Image (tube, rainbow, N blue to C red):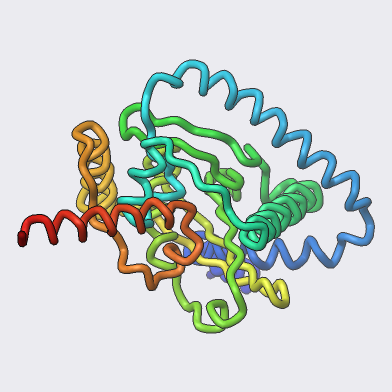
Length: 276
């Protein structure tokens, strides 16, 4: 006959498997309750040192793959034409306001990475840091990019991705955003790690929501891989692709808006010429 202790152990084990996002978030919160016992500056310096080591590895990878064109995995959920502009090497300088928004996001990432590192020190039997901001290249799928972290919980590897969003978005967030869902699958293809934790932080009050996604080969085969193929074909043939209508958030913060407007003008001029 099972004892109460045995039943609780079995229940906890099931929860570890079914709710990794809840367990991860609980460990993160427990870490913050202990944070006053360590020096945040030392942790931040350690994080930056780990990231710098990953950058050295990245430089070697870039030397080996510089002649090839890869799609950034982080962009896979966004407008196909913007990804094409990126492949074509088009660049646009962001406004100072947009630059500050990007910097805020980068600094938030480093802060959360410091929490992860501290968590691995406080709970070494439960979580281990494998990489912080590693760079990957997949020649098979023609994608590349960084992931925010790779961790191990109970010997299972997870990709961890951080997202900072505004308060209104956060309040209405009950599942992973569509573009981030596709991004998670691109990361899984790129790394071979099929478990992904997506941590969203409210920019206004730093509250968190965490979601767990598992790689779905159907999504990869019917959405991700065909999209990559279409974009690379358009790049090779110097074609244009379908663009978003300009109303989405990705259009609002897109670095290629000026090129998109120019493309729209050229299309309109061509249409007028055809009517003459």
